Image (cartoon, rainbow, N blue to C red; front, side):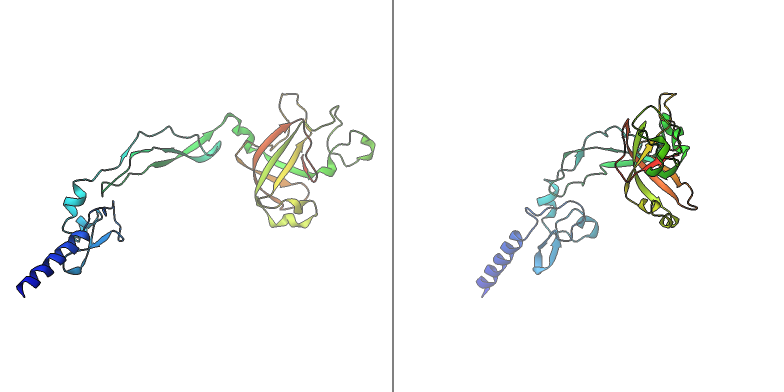
Length: 248
């Protein structure tokens, strides 16, 4: 009988060793990182078990001696401000050089973010509010006498000075009042032509915006039709595909 008890004790001990923390060490807090300990109770092999006091008996021997803490490299440079004009944010990051193993210290934060204020030299243009009309008001170079509704003087060019592509970010409900203004819908990409002069070397159209910055617009002759957009592209000497808009 005594021999049987001894053998049973050996089996329990063997079961305990097989169910210990060997090859099961985990960093941080991990409730799935457990093993069967003495008396068939559950014990843990994550590094947090030292705080909660429920580590397996072989935790220190199996995990702490072989633990390798996380090592990281230096911080990289800060990114440019997310907003070219006004309040935005900058980010920077660093890389893991040695990952944690066997319950070693987990990695610290790998990314940081801070506020910034965009000061692009072109920010003055972001203050202008664009006034829009449908492309039916563009000048007709082929027969200017037919287009009595044109709002610009005739020019020698057969193309607008530029066309700007915007992503609409906000559109008022009043824009649903006219067929042409119904094309102004949130998240839609629109093209707007500038027919001003280039006497100063750049398009003379108020509100043509700043690349990547949120600016504002109003639909001429439609009360309350207004909103905001972000310019995604600007091309010189091009014409917008219909349906399009023009700057006033």
